[in-house]
Image (cartoon, rainbow, N blue to C red):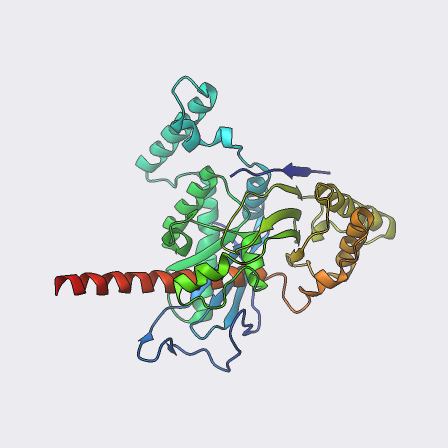
Length: 387
């Protein structure tokens, strides 16, 4: 079994699966139609384009749009081809340690990290040469860009308007992979709304986006920045267990979260490319062995805890599978003798496939609104000084 245990510090073809349009509010209330304008104050009506969250998994990408009236509209799901799946699987299995981070190495005295410094210099030269030749920053950037072109085209077909900015969410990326992701966005003519809010640019962590997709870690009075900051500072911390059961992979992660937007260091997790839905046997005995390995991965990961998780978040196209949920309950009972059924019920009304995309769209829209409000306040303050 190919099992990755991690502790983090820090032209492709595709198959499109269309879904029925849904409006699932994360906050606020349900409305019948998606309106182009919404009254945000007594005297002011402001226009904001919908924010588009896209969750990049190891086998597909799925998108959702957040509109001004608080509704979420599910968009297309685009399945990746073999090149995309190979790229994403390799990325999630090859995470750099902080000692391999070229930015960190560059900040250290010249006599330190000689081997790493040599590798970083070679990477810099190689990418510079590719740029001079008019080539993408790397082969990985080219592969991802080809897939992004298809995703962008399908979203534009679905929405009937051009798309220039997205809120991408994916498993945590090291700095080198973030550079490749940014290069792929540039090649596709897209910008990341994540890069606009000034914190950990380019992508949202998928577990944070899924947490947000369930409505966790948010303030209620978010249109006033000071009030939101005060409210979020009083949110409770939770030990959260994230379980992603997808087509080509299974991931179990534990994290300590309060705010959905605050990406702390994942302190324990396991990943396997051999325990995805596509690997699930039909025959009874091999199938039992498969579930036993899932059970073992969960037990290994949560054993570091001396207490049960405060919340459980299910992710992935098959995160809601009944047989999988039964394995999760059995694993937690075997370690902590806790009945996880109540915590799992929080996921029952949600589409685990689209949870992270919806959460990314919500976080991006809030950030976009507050950023626009800040700019307006600065312009108004400057105008008053000039008078």
